[in-house]
Image (cartoon, rainbow over all chains, first blue to last red; front, top):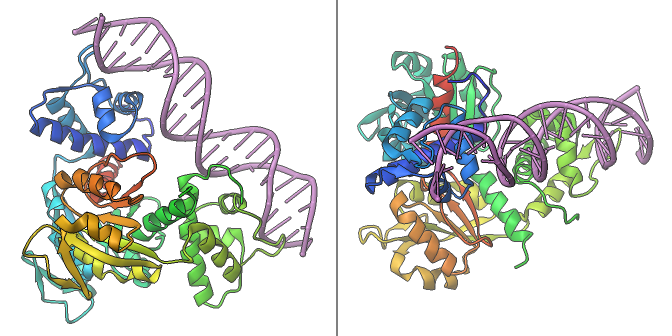
Length: 210
Length: 210
DNA sequence: GTGTGTGAAGGGTTTCACAGCA
DNA sequence: TGCTGTGAAACCCTTCACACAC
């Protein structure tokens, strides 16, 4: 496995290939070409081959890729062959929906902890997990060995939550608050900012010939 | 306004500037430099100036930008000075959370219609909006003049929903299903794929020196 | 003096096109 | 023959650096 810097877009595409491969396997397909895989995600076959080539040579010339083997390789690359402990911070609409959302667990992202500062919400159970007091965050994040924090609080609270989880040793954050977070370089943040996507659609609707 | 092709990343950054400007205005700041705006979103000042320069010259040399005027200009560019009619398709965890999420309405994205095919859910009210029968989708999308469809159904149903809304004349889709959608070129799709973000975090946790 | 607007340079990602192997 | 793996080319986006306006 090369030590070259792999681009974020390559990683994101690997996620897509992974899901496409899952589907192909489920449909009983044992082999796939870069062309076919590309078509499934609306990209080019050269892109698929280049993405995979950063990590090794998984295909057979003239034949394509073995679906099961390739899925396994990608799982290995992405670190999906293990479980990750996840905390959701903020038990509002979004936080609760994520806690109930089954997809995460399926991929090995286990929701171990839900935190909120609203006394009304503390003590409620979501999918068998008790909402805990945000004031105990540091202690509980460490006790539960949380590795990934999902921030689902209002924008004005998001930075202070980020500061706290970074303090507690978290190195990966998924941020649903519509604002940029400032974190040290060893911490990874991914943003799930629905406002940006909606406004991007608004721009294209506004600026396309109707 | 130039007819040059503006990149998606520029548009996404404009959304960020817009939110940063809102905050500055709220804090009573009347002027901002590209340097300061850049710092708020963790990018470079040259990037801010270049992004804005695609659309006009909004700043004053030696002074910076007027916060209110610039916010207004960006609203104009992104098409935020009007209301958009939005439908949510799928009243599961995610769909319901989005319907209740206040941020959309604030920015002019009005949820006019919620659809689901589950008889249990049809007839329920979410924030004063009745969940309607998915079988009436075509008719209702047109009647309510829907312009943007939010797809919040399971992956295996997402493509058929996309086909239907495209058929009904929708040209903008926000897709929460963890799969790629195939649509004609005149239709814009944005993906809000939490699995990809989580897996990207997983990759970086796995491949960083602990 | 200060900070914008922008051509040019630089860097990175995607596409091309083909050698090489099953 | 068919499809991968990959250098080279093309393309796009970001950063630099400075003329210029306030």
